[in-house]
Image (cartoon, rainbow over all chains, first blue to last red):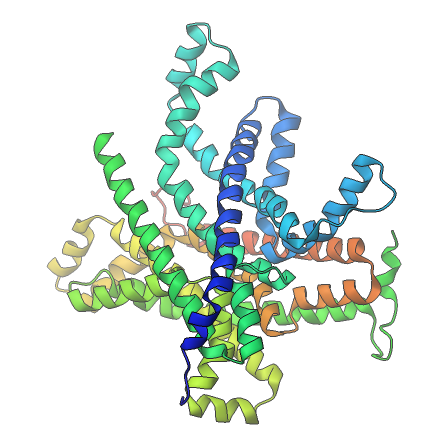
Length: 228
Length: 241
């Protein structure tokens, strides 16, 4: 127990903060990208055009049955090969795990956001869809002006909760040697052999951030619930 | 593409690659099995505690759930694997004497068990709270104690109600065992990566792992659906005839 040295954290703080910045950035990009792609997937799953609905359902079920870690490694080696094929280059580009992670998390989270948005769209009464078509709106207009704004609003707390989970899941990229918040802590812990201090610090920071965020989501949920 | 690679022998190991993956699958399922027993037991106790009328117990239960839900799983793995032995001398003494594989296996069970128990506690609590107050009162009215009311009235219904979310938790638990790779447990993902790096057959190996994880998810889903049908109460939504 003796000899804990928390000064190591102070010294490493700029490095750790850069890691945290990457984590936050990746979370925000993946949450936004995942919501957009997830919403499109949800619309595809609810489509009356069967092959499209089946393809979307297949994609979502595949992603949801795989461990995130496997998906991270899949994309890490698959993305360069795909880019090479698409561009017709001779060699695969060097993309690096930091950048491939953006694609991974957008694609992976989209499956989870899709299920949330699907529930959101299905929570809107059929009458509204009928009414939208009756006043002459097209499918895209009805979605954009009537259905999706309400679905987003109803599902906002769930989307945010999923984003907090995403914020925690991003830490898995540290296993690809990426310097996210956890990755930065692992590197410092090994360099200075200050494992206990480092990992406790990371746990406390995550706890405070996630607890505060989920508390705020709960507050938001109450406010939305009263208005409706 | 060459899927024959799985039948080839591993250099200097005396077994084929597919056997190596199968052994990884065994560790994955074993870890998930024991972690589930721990998670279900603890999660049920904490979930029940959070619905009692003892304020301090409810607070304690809430704190437990928040603690395990707001720290990333991989950080929890690091805490159990690196921090706990360093802080508690008794654990350290045991770790030094123990087989590293035993320590990894036990760490994974405890870490995943506690992590999952917080989620189960949340499901059990919401399951109990979704029952009408009348059920609890009816239990007390016919003279049951609080323990008996939980045992014979509330829990039998609550567990049935939460089978669908519990199914998701079973599948999440199995998927989460892959994170035990971070502490070196030789589960399925560890073996997958090892094989991919040694043979450079990334596509074939990852495809095989994908297939195995899909099969596990599908089987877990079927087993839970079977349980759900077997225990369904007639007259309720989703109940039998």
